[in-house]
Image 1: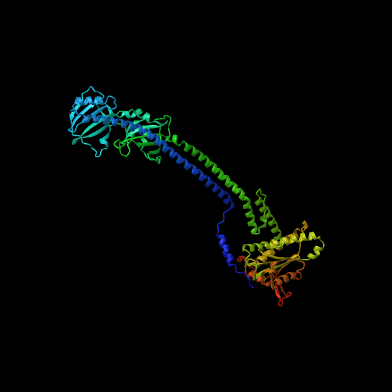
Image 2: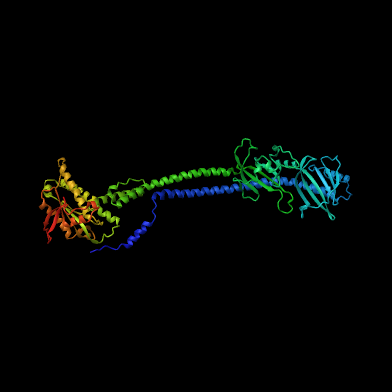
Length: 628
């Protein structure tokens, strides 16, 4: 008669469902919306910041081009002017048809340099090695004439046969000079003319190089010698033959950090030289004590393009506080910072609102869990909500909970809990199991009820059933049905219980304690019943029995009738007892065979044998024991 269905597919589906991740709605609403807001607004802030950075670089590039082009033009104009004059003088000297003698050379030089006073000294060496030097600062002094090695250019393919030499100190004139050397081809040799220019002339160009406030221009020979700087007059530098010009590392200004690449160094992506560094401006601004983000701009005067003075190794540039150029970026960064704070606050508010919105749903889920496990005592009315859908869901759930609570009065809750836990597995089938069945009956209830109103009778009987139901539920028994003033219950189904006889014994002992207590408290207006109980252990058919519209989870079989007959036998064995519990021999054997622990095993003579009785419907007499 085992009609238990195959639920392999359902079990597999159940396992699959358990593997799926479940995300709390609070995390979905609060975290999800907050994260979405954070990502979207953060992306906008990032785009604005990136755009500001690009605009700042663009401003730096355009402004740098303006500053450097102006500086380069000023220096290039000066150098070009001097080179043209030098070329003119060289042509006069070399192409003269007269026999060049010291007096004639001096006459030519005086006529050519009437309008050009930047040159302090000119030297001429012909192809035979005759050397003539004229000090233009003191024309009254006779020229120096001597013989030297024949001139020959040191560099091949020299541009325009012209070269600028590094600064040198002249002890005779007591100044630092730059020398421009020109070579002229003459027959099978070269003639050389040199022009000495005071390096101080470059200092006078700085004012013309300034294009905006805060700009600090400079002119370098190659990368390490300073020809002119805005802070050079403050250095108190005295040139000498060993140190004709101030070096970068010797100057006490932000210029000495121009080539240092420390942690603060950041190159600006432009075609000319530009980078940012943190340096101290204490020598320029006496109040400055902290490092200032400084922008350095620099470019060579001569480019690599043809005919643009590759022989002139000068570098011009400027440095200025980066704040002057990056103020729009700084302002936008401040706005971005404020926006980030607002975004963080908005994200937190969104998460808070999400959690607040999720609380009714979470509460509904908890109540649904309690309902799922039929824990009706945990059900509390869900509150009203301002959100229409949540309010309607709460009202519907409250109504469903009330309906189920009312319906649970007609269905054994323990049975429903077990069926819910097993996903109603086996509801459509029946099984054969060995159970312990109990019947109870109130002695003389008809006579008692005849003296009470219907309301009092119902109230009294319900209170009695409540006491018995609590004892049965506490021992994990299942109430089958209420029969008049009696109860039919069993142990061992729907859950398998190895010690079902022991559990039934625990229940009747609890019932006996309640009956005895009621008799003791009778003087306190408590009504006391006398009760007969029958217990029997045997194999029965258990499962859902009934029609498709209405079914009952019950037990049937001859052993069920034996338990009922034992209850009836109680009025014969001891009709005046407050409570009498009779059990069959099979129940006693089950008690001795199965128990919760070895200390609870029962001796064969622990329970009093009443005798052998021929029960109605049984062919053989049965030994009957009294448990209570």
